[in-house]
Length: 312
Image 1 (cartoon, rainbow, N blue to C red):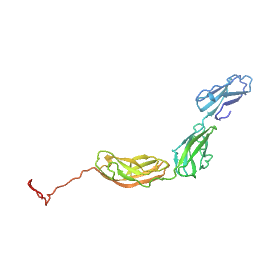
Image 2: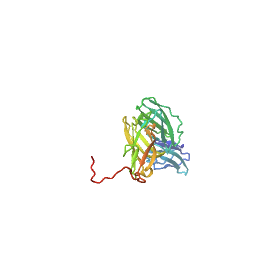
Image 3: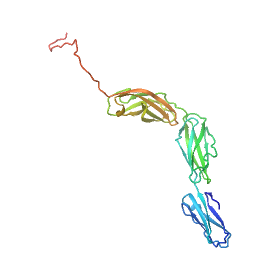
Image 4: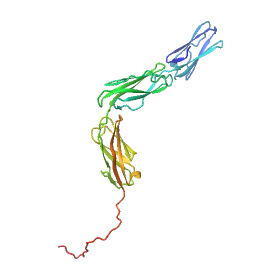
C-alpha cells in the first residue's frame, strides 16, 4: 500500500507473508467505514480490504490498518476528497471598466488547488492563466485579465474552473457582465438647500437639513455619491442609471454645521469604478441667527400731526 489521495472506491492489498490465519482491516477517520471483505484468510497469500467511500458521510483524513492473527499490523493514510474547490468572485463584477482584472478566491482545504482556468464569451477575450498559479496550496487568489474589445453597454459571460489534487473539478459562472468603460454622466452638478432652493439657508438651527444635488448620472450603471464638507465625509446617496437629470440628497448635521459657512464637495462613482467630481468646493451658508440692531437714533425731518390735520 502507498499513502495517497483518493476520491473513489478504494482497495488495500496486503501480502500474507506470515501465513496468518486471518487479516482484519479497520478504517479510522471522520466516519466509520466497514471492510466489505471482512473474512478470514487462512491459506491465502494475498489479501484485499475493500472500502466503499460512499458509506462515508464526511471527507477528510483516514487511516486504514491491516492486522494479522500473528500480531503484525501495518497502516496507511489517505485523504478522502469528493468535492471540487470552492470559487468566489472577490468583487461584484456585474459592471466592469475597460480591460478589467477579475479576481477569484479559490479554496480546497483537503487536497489543494491544482489548476485554474477561465473561458469567456462574446467579443471579450481572456488571457491564459498560468498552470502553477496556485501550486497546490489550500487557498489562493487568482487574477484573470480580460480584454474588452466591445462597445459601451455590451455584455459577456465568464466561466472559471478549478481542479484539486484528487481530480475533482468545479466551475463558477457569471453571466451578463456589462462593460461600462467610462463615466458618461454630467461633469458637474447644481447644489442648493432643499428648504431654500438656494445656497443660503436661514433658520432650522435645531434640525438636520438636506442639500439637493441635481445632475445626469451614468447611463449604464448606478451611481454612488459621496458628500464631503471641508474634506470630511458627511453622507452618501445612490442614483439609478438614467439619461435624464436626477436629484439626490445629502443630509447635513445641524450640530456640526448650523450657523456656519462651509465648502461642499460631491464625488460620483459608477458600479464599474469610473469616477467624476460633480461639485468641487461649493460654498454653502447656514445662517440660524436673527438680525440684531445695536441702537436706534432719532429720525430727523419727521413731523407729528394732530388728528385734525387735513391733507389737501
